Length: 106
Image (tube, rainbow, N blue to C red; front, side):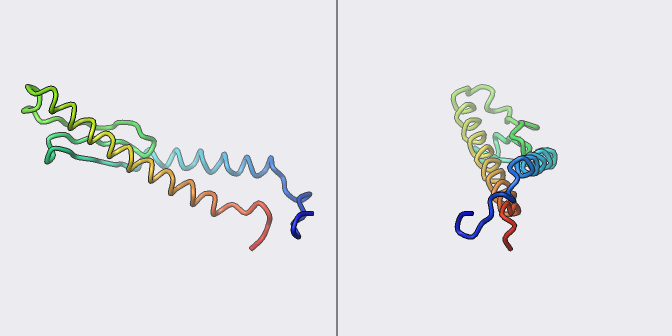
């Protein structure tokens, strides 16, 4: 017993399975979540789902003649949309951990 907690009641296997089930469910739900970022005043637009998979990419035709500008705008939009997705995943993970109560305390 540590600080009033009876660790003999803690089942690590059940806890791990619960966490795995929650992670699987979150991944399935993330497919429906969409994040979009634009750069260059909308000349480049990229959308990804909650699992960070690219689902749409739009590049203004005027950028096809200016490769360097296109790459700069594309990289900017990609970095921004990935950051959005990462923040969403962190939020989901924190919510999942908050919902777990391995020690049976209220």
